[in-house]
Length: 219
Image (cartoon, rainbow, N blue to C red):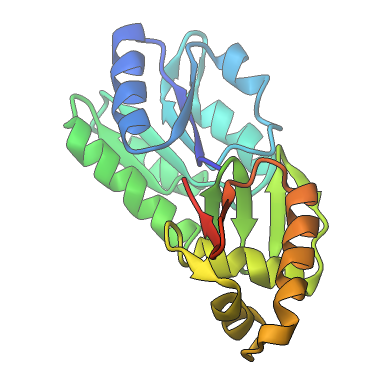
């Protein structure tokens, strides 16, 4: 699942440019142009970072970060402002911002700052996306559209064996050795049985059968 960034900027051209550069980095970007638009989404649980302009119609990004911080202190916030004043930077930090970018700024610098904060904030999250499923290997959980898919230990281990060896074909014997920890021709059926249960729970998983050979996970 892509990380979600909320961009709050009333200058539409700049908002669009920031959105385009962040999307190139693989983020999902939600653009808001007014305080009221953004404030309506403060309680969204899937936003990973806020990028806020300070000047927003009759209110400000300072007002908005107070709303965000009432909900959580965990989501990073970056201010964007044409006002290169130490006073504004101090207020931003006091209100819980993580960074401050002065306009006009380089898009590359903006992306670099966002990436660095994202890495620091979510460095403990080992999540990967495979065939439309989100896998959190830290918690050993699999999600589809935000819902947890209940997998047994063997089903999860089989899934991760293929995720870590994507695009590589494996015989049933190799799968037995890699997942179950032993190699036995008499136990081939356990691979097929576990695979069948995994496919039933994750029908969108692109694990293909290779005739007279085994299986392979494709993109």
